[in-house]
Image: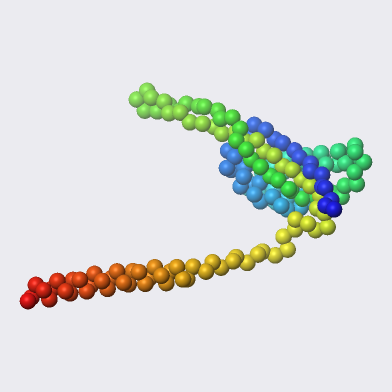
Length: 169
């Protein structure tokens, strides 16, 4: 019987950063323990890092509050970042003056950040070691391609030699 774990989340909407830049910070914390993720965001030199830190703190506070309300036994030390997303928000259309009275349009991007945390169950979801990549056996295909290429080279070479001997005779 699988034990169902509760998921707690926090959202920060309409953040003035592009989702691509926010994902750089969120990728650092995804899958890590909450304490380690808080330390990572505290020392990251990105403009969005303090917002992610505050969001993660809010998710932990939400977990404590909901666990207290529902009478769930929650171990904060076993919490980890289950999901960390940066979705597109609305875009603000702006105009930049251009030469000769023209105007260039550009877009300011906004992001919706979502962080959800859950409690680890008996070390599940832990990465203990990196899996070794499986080698693909493509050697026979390479040998077959090399054979075809060598046959094509020899056939053209023999044709040219035959033409030269025919021209001399």
